[in-house]
Length: 327
Ligand code: TXA
Ligand code: MG
Image 1 (cartoon, protein in one colour):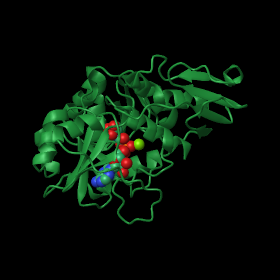
Image 2: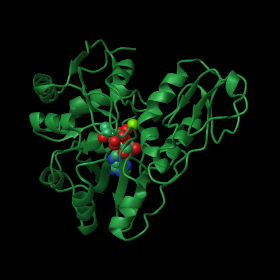
Image 3: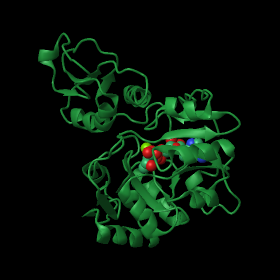
Image 4: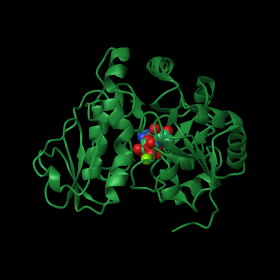
């Protein structure tokens, strides 16, 4: 149901970015592109704006948000960096990496955005429009992915509009995103921990740290009072159709999400076929994943059969999102 706002959709030029910065200062909600997925931004220091953001997404307020900033100085006003965290920041920011760190003293991010935790998630995005918006606004912007809670993340402005028309003030259209899956989240505790596989492959992080990352916490329910990554519940990214993984055939009534050459039994009867990458390129597959899941879901197929995708590099994040879509 719309919340009665009239949502402005603007092509991301200088005037539009300035308008979006004003909108954030006035406590408004702005959809904007990052290199990973589109985010829904609010002033990180404005609890009323953040409350509206949770409402617009239909997101439970115990699920904390990522604070987006323009540079390391702004990040250090929010969170405490140890030597490992600083090494990660220097190597991979700006880019598709989020660090969960202890809050700094006088952390400007509102408690509502961190769900009362004593840690905070921070990232410096690399997308030009995101960076311009952060500069125009002049402070930290909390931004979850700009989808309704439970839907797959948006990789185009049209996806944002489809989910949030009438629920947000403004959407900046910066074209399709580059990466296509959300940022990799690392918990910088005594032992660095992979909280969410994402757009920065685990291998690159482990090479830099010279050690293996602890395994992601598989959280199947919300019973734990302080889940490490509260948003990583099993069914977070679900399309409407039933998703069947590791498919080696197409069954009656199913659409096919293919990867690589797709000569499967039953292919001729598939409701629809979309190929994440004919040549088996994981980077290309990541950029297409969420859009293809959205599109296949519109065919009204009983199910979506998904071919196996290798697990290395961006394949770890792709397989993680596919498992959630199937849960
Ligand atoms: O690529 C991305 O990360 C996108 C773009 C917009 O930046 N954002 C994004 O936000 O994916 P969201 O809210 O959809 O996912 C953020 C995840 C959630 O699973 C949340 O539980 C986790 O980060 N998170 C946030 N703060 C945390 C904290 N202090 N400790 C552990 N997990 C945290
Ligand atoms: Mg999300």
